[in-house]
Length: 124
Image (cartoon, rainbow, N blue to C red; front, side):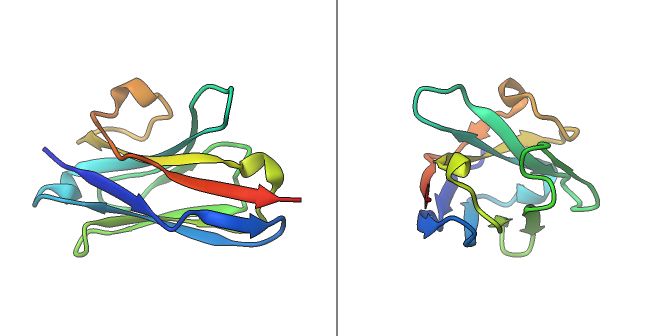
């Protein structure tokens, strides 16, 4: 079992940057593929990025490729999402999720554990 807590959200102007963090409890963090998802008001949840359990592979949604970077520190039980060149359409609640021994995937239903989310608002 792993519990996830996101932080780092906030209000930023278009073109700005934010760094989200997701801290995981437990001693098995390194066994999980980690993902970031987001959900804007009135829209379905969508995949943002994922990173393999050994951090040797990453996967991004086309909408964030080249602007966002996912990384992890298994010693600190933390996964990060560096978001640069933010756009108003990036406004959403961002969630981290964990998928035990999983392959990189954008399919949210395969992730067993989810955090409570952190709000990101990008003003124009």
